[in-house]
Length: 197
Image 1 (cartoon, one colour):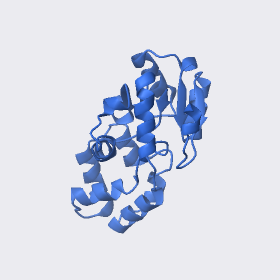
Image 2: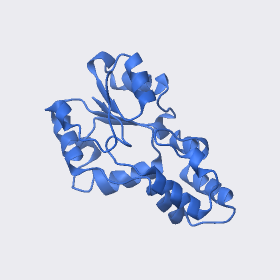
Image 3: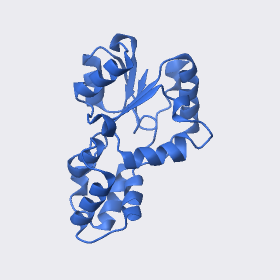
Image 4: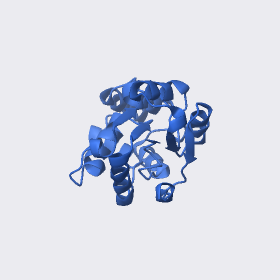
């Protein structure tokens, strides 16, 4: 089975993040940060086309003055809320019985912070939850493009018709369905444990 990260496992607050970047002085931030997909500089960060340093430098250019790296990261992290403990426990339980993967449009700034603060907070490691994580910034590929799914299928040697894919983005679900996956569209903050009962 394959899980998305943002909006499926971790709860998100897009508006809080937009507000923080507006406070820092970034104009047109509303157009760059989406619920299901990013554009411009933020998409480049998700695809691994810019490093965190380049990203922060570009944010400073958008603001028109130097801003501390920590302040930029803090604003960016306000997008992320929490991963409910029951979801971590669900993943760990599923991992003991099934092949479990993560396929996410994410970026190194977010993912490293959440890996340390939430996934590994209770003494577990990423391996306790996932056989492998397929992250857009490492692959250079983003959903909903077929290439991102095909990369994972080929690398993990899994068949879509034998795989459940859970995501909160309709475009991602539509693409996965067209490739033959069994799919489930998760709602914001949904408890979908009943799927595995």
